[in-house]
Length: 532
Image 1 (cartoon, helix red, strand yellow):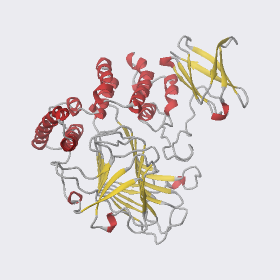
Image 2 (cartoon, rainbow, N blue to C red; image 1 turned 180 degrees about the vertical axis):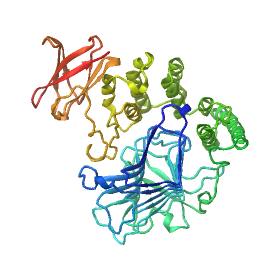
Image 3 (spheres, helix red, strand yellow; image 1 turned 135 degrees about the vertical axis):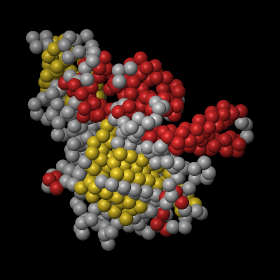
Image 4 (tube, rainbow, N blue to C red; image 1 turned 45 degrees about the vertical axis):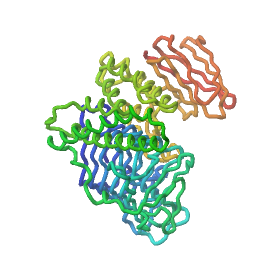
């Protein structure tokens, strides 16, 4: 229905409300887009009429939000399927894929009727301080019975994925409120989080059986439920000081609150190492976390207001507020903005500071390195003035390495590919690669591949002089030979694993032949075009 990717914040964002989506395999698809507003929409979740007999499409998704997303409004939407008989295809309400820590990222106050999975979380959606939270959502199943082969999951965090560890409403500096979610109460799991190494603390209102994850015939996996004595009044009232885009008087008050909160946050952070009593340490740490969340809520309102301020009434810079927020996602957005607007010196300075500034762990550092690889693939052409939407085919071929990758580097590469006409939507469901529309099977690139569908894949990266060769597990070890058109062998290298990189930096631009001989299987040859 709608596709949106926004690599730079100065190009604004979008508002979608009071619309009706029908016959879309995906109603809304965002990629690394922040500051958007999606409210009071109706989504009839079913496969498009023309796809009903396509055996490779097995699910319909109301909304997919993917890639690092620092702040948005997503509430009051209605996901439904109204047919009398259950569909054969899976129906997914909203899926969130690698949104990262974010800025008060919340899915709130939505209604889901007859969804097989109302909420699906894939990849890193934050875990500690400010990850993804589900609040005040309502699930319902109208069928009298659910076939055994269908397993309902109101909330599903896929293996290896994360959402915020403490699922509770922190939209206040007082004690947290329960989530306020109402479960479907039939046919499966209220909460399914198979990665029990990352248990989720789930706060619910003990006075409502519908909000109890163990109510009716539901079960749960991977959460630690805790009952609260009071319900969540925020489910029925507006708790934010204004609705973006806020008017000047309201946003000025939010800015003042932000600066006051930040000053107190910095003061308590500085004092924390001097506290010796363990109980006092915990109290101080809880206060620091609450202040940080309040800052993120305030920064989100400010950034959304500037992004949606099409009349340019506000005078402050959205870039200045990205810096003031002082979070990894906002600094990443700012660095990405500098990169795609050609301010490479500013990008390089900020990029180098991010790891130490936020104490990134090994996983985050590895992801940052891979993001840098994507950026380095396109940087030489951007430096020479080639538009982002007119990149050379050889560069696009190198980005195809990430076409089925459900990570932030993948989202970034896919956004660039989309800008250049290669409409890649990866399959992140965990099913077979060809099981969803747009999973990458629809596009035949001009990269070095055999005419037949070879299981061996080659991904050239001209800017770095690297050729990546992917092999099926059964093919390794293998040998790769590189020839010029005169038949002279220029390079021989062993391929020991499934993913192998060959350094071609000293090779001149031109056409080459790559020959791969696996330990089992026939020898295969590929044409390789280098355009450095």
